[in-house]
Image 1 (cartoon, rainbow, N blue to C red):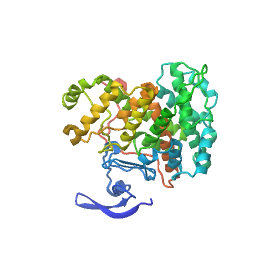
Image 2: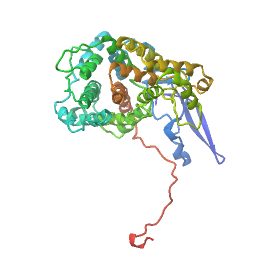
Image 3: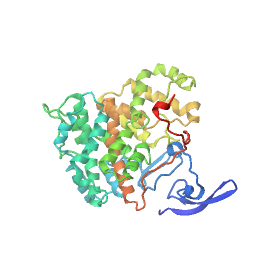
Image 4: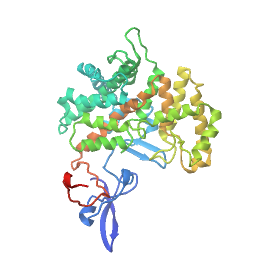
Length: 432
């Protein structure tokens, strides 16, 4: 641990006092080191959801939820959104922004890994056509370990980097294949002359019978969406990746575990839920009744796309997402989309209504991303898949950081046991 031991914390139980070191990070709250709590006291801490527990050290992403700040390697997300996604990938992986030469080399390495083994096409044929794309992603990403076992030695830094590059490059290809399989169209191979996001759009929407020209506005919008979702500190899926990786599992299996966790509606599926909410409201004139129902404690109506577990201020990604949303709707001719009108009116209410302001229920990134992705042409079943494409670099960066930590341990949370105490087994024929 290279954090500074700033002071000591004292825990007193039954007139016995115990001292624990307090560490200060570069920014953010101090952390009490309770790693020896059980050894010294015979007790555990109780922290459901680990909301007050720092499970690791990290130098990758920092969030100040009260100030509405998101930093990747110290850079504000608003500034990074001016660049492209692969630049952000390089930053997350290596810790520094690339020079022009490094960026060119990195882009080349990613591009040369975008194809997947041809046997993967047969692998897809084992799924039902109506299989959810996220189910396909969990299986296909995990299956990469069977095709690229030459990069699964986690103790070899070179193999770890090759696996990282393969993941960043191949997950979009698998995502496009999952989409094509769901809609019954042939797979489209990657095209090395295109940039990362344009290539992905082409793999999703091109068909062999006609030429496909990538819309630069839509490509830039999706690229920005990828940047906004690239990493987000120790969220549920990232913690899952780290937990899986702590056992020594190969990186492909760890990312598949992260995708499985992301699939949950409380995590990656939030933008789909927000879009569904807007569709259910339908028109601006129905908003007052909806807001009334949200405020009614006896109502089961929930406000989706507002508030955040971490952010207690305006989500910095939401501002960029709103701008992106307007650009896409204007380009696609959907600027009069009734869903956007509902969204804007809801946002206005949330920023001014005392009920929402007092509870700090500000619009989050999911509020606008669903509308944007729908306008680009993606069905709601693909929303979380796109999230996974973006978050892959964050997951693999966090995994790499953990593996390089000399004293990392297998994840092993403890519990507050409330079950039966020791009981004696009774043979079946003697039980009444």
